[in-house]
Image 1 (tube, protein in one colour):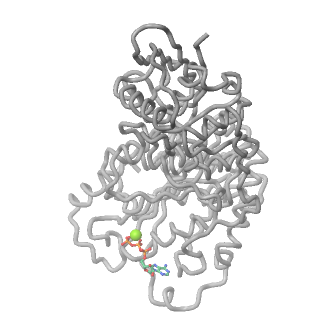
Image 2: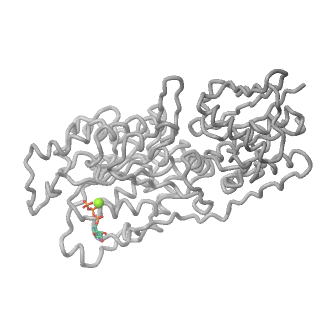
Length: 511
Ligand SMILES: Nc1ncnc2c1ncn2[C@@H]1O[C@H](COP(=O)(O)OP(=O)(O)OP(=O)(O)O)[C@@H](O)[C@H]1O
Ligand SMILES: [Mg+2]
């Protein structure tokens, strides 16, 4: 029977669902019709496949060819199916043995001359093929990605001819798993904590933020070290777990960003410019590519000069900050990307930057300040656990010797504290404190009588929302974890509350 089936993989968010290419040859006028692909994609693919088959010295069957790509509901775009379509035509016309194609999936775009070109989103396809128990043939240009997954069987091809020979008599060599397992256990950081003068409060807040993956906002005049402080964060974070590293690499693969095996377990640190559009931030566009919030998944999203971002772009952050995912809907389907990131933001308190400064240099009118701060909505602030002032340093703090305290030891030592605090959280609840659900909160963050009484006072005094109250408890839990304290004591709650409602922010709305 002149029917052949070849397996390939689509790209849907960061998943890679199976697509079956069925080709049927029948008698009749020579023609090629494809079902299950959008019209433009069909036209382009048809021409590439025909040229590639002829240029590879193979025969393009002069029969009526019907190709069905199933399931119909999976969005299909780009040239990633070309190789699968070509192989299925060749198998249907008896130029390739059909049986061998059943255990291999293929991915690759064809050039007119028959060369196989690289495609995006290979890594999720490798994972999915491995889980389905099949091997995967990938373009040689994607070899780096294909060799990152443990336990997968992959082959790299450069031409259509080579792909055909693999199924006939010259099997390709299996790619060798390349990842360097001797991972460095520290993440490279552009700035060490020890290099930052003063700013004790902000450093402490950053340590807490790192320990529980809490969101943090720094407010202060120009040149006081806000950007510098944020850039110390990568050095405080532990390396990613295997599952998170794989998720992060899959996202980069789908977004078409380079993958570096040496950076495998380094948490992402994304710092988009404030001119970023909504699509750049949350994802979307014609090919539904992931945005910054997804690229920051399992890592940090740093928004410097927060007030310079467009308001609607900041509002887009509300959904992922709450749910850890972002869903982009199209007329006929929707895609959900992971977006569980830690938000670190920095801003000046007013347009001139000196509002609240002790030297009183601010020249902004109250209306101007109000307009400036309008971009930062109450709901966005409500999702940020730590609000910290980063004031101007006096001369002694800047030039004198640093006080020797528990924060003066530099990033490497602080990182050890973060790692052990995180371990405690993961053993207890399986997730970091900031990611505890309301249901988990009750069992994991039980309060004793004194703490409960204090929390009641805090909630009433600061008029906290239910969300803010929950976030406060989680923050207090992290502060307790940094001290290895099994209980949340009143002092932990008091410190957590001190990161809300401080003077520089009193000008902000809805606090
Ligand atoms: N606390 C500090 N310790 C050491 N150096 C500092 C400190 N604060 C600022 N600096 C120096 O000043 C430079 C500017 O700091 P940074 O960019 O972090 O300021 P900023 O608070 O982000 O300012 P802006 O509000 O204008 O963005 C740093 O590169 C560093 O050289
Ligand atoms: Mg700055």
